[in-house]
Amino acid sequence: MVLLGRSSDGTLKRREHVCFAMIIAAVGVAGAGLVSSPVLVLGLLCLSQIGVSATPPLLWPIPTAFLTGSSAAAGIAAINSIGNLSGFFGPYVMGYLKDLTGTFTAGLLVLGAVTLAGGIVAMTLKVSRDLESAVARKAAPAE
Image 1 (cartoon, rainbow, N blue to C red):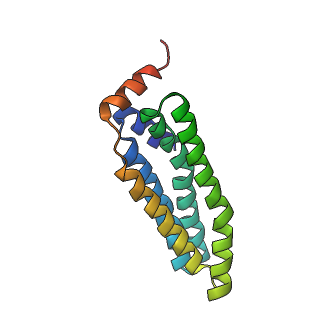
Image 2: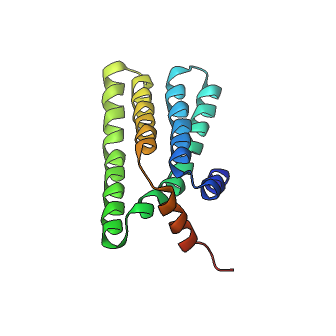
């Protein structure tokens, strides 16, 4: 998480770093649904957690790069609200698919696909590099 954050701050390639972290999470969670070895499942879930933990600090600077003032507050609230919906619907989808198929495989594959789709959406965001540089300079710590 720290290494991705430093790289993101240094290169200002925020979208690419968010996408990379989400791909790591997607591969981990979907892979955990496809393997049968408990050791591999644990390793893949750990990999997934690395991606999940690295995503928020990489994601939150993006809206502040192009939203200011009250629109920034509204945009961040909207993003947070949508994220909270996933925490509500995710367990229901997982439980429904577990009841339907008898295994967790389908649910983990769906969660992996949704995470991958989120990474793709993050890559499609158009954020001006000049705007990101200005925000980074404004937010730089005092020396």
